Image 1 (cartoon, one colour):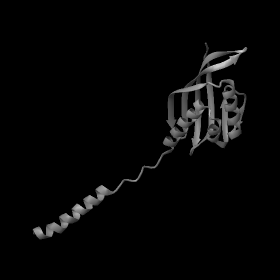
Image 2: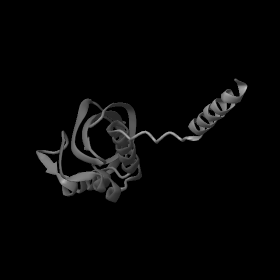
Image 3: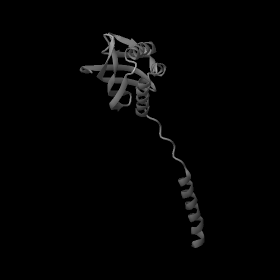
Length: 156
């Protein structure tokens, strides 16, 4: 009886050893993780004033609206126009994110923009509260709507 158990035990031991050595497949990266990465990079590029990298994040047909501009801008060209102007007006602006709500392809970001702005020949410090809603498909921003709370716009 012990002679027949040995081959069975050896087979079970070999199966267990093989199962322990199998590496699990990497989990597929979900859209939620991709969206988070896009937004993290977006705000890093904003703080670095990296216009080229910011513009590259946008889809060619992205719809971009903001309470600071009339109408809407489209695609990479629209993003270039908006961010070029923002960086020109306030070259030291910092974007401080304090809340992100990520729902796969829609990401809502609440943040403050602080910096210096030229007014009447002398710079003034400002703090502006913003909320942006991003639509993301794959690793591209397909839409962005940014809203500013002018009541929380503080000149110092």
